[in-house]
Amino acid sequence: MYAIVEIAGRQYKVQENSYLIVNRLEAEQGSTIEFDKVLFIGGDQVKVGQPTVSGAKVSCTVTNHGKGDKVIIFKKKRRKGYKVKNGFRHYLTRLRIEKITA
Image (cartoon, rainbow, N blue to C red; front, side, top):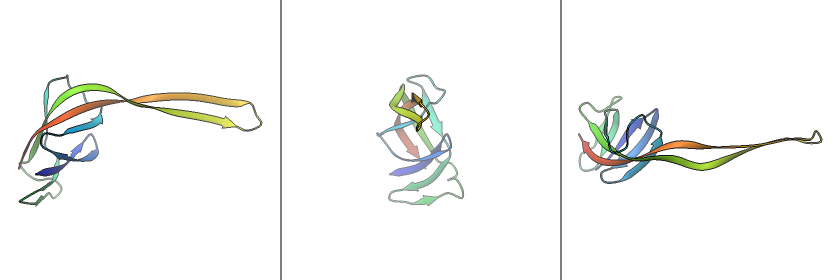
């Protein structure tokens, strides 16, 4: 069974006992979070939400917080002597999908 869930404005396809990396969530490591914006449930029985499936939930456990890969921003204007190099790393949260209830 799998589901399509909206988490922090983005849609993700999730399955039970799998991991998911999303933008940083305000939750402590080891805590359990439930998402109720389930848009679609697939498997033996297909349920399509209008816009969400009523009564469906996805429960997750926060495994850890971290940072993503570094993204380099390089700006240059030719013949002007202007060069700027910056970089940043996204703050991410890793979730373990525990249970999908329909």
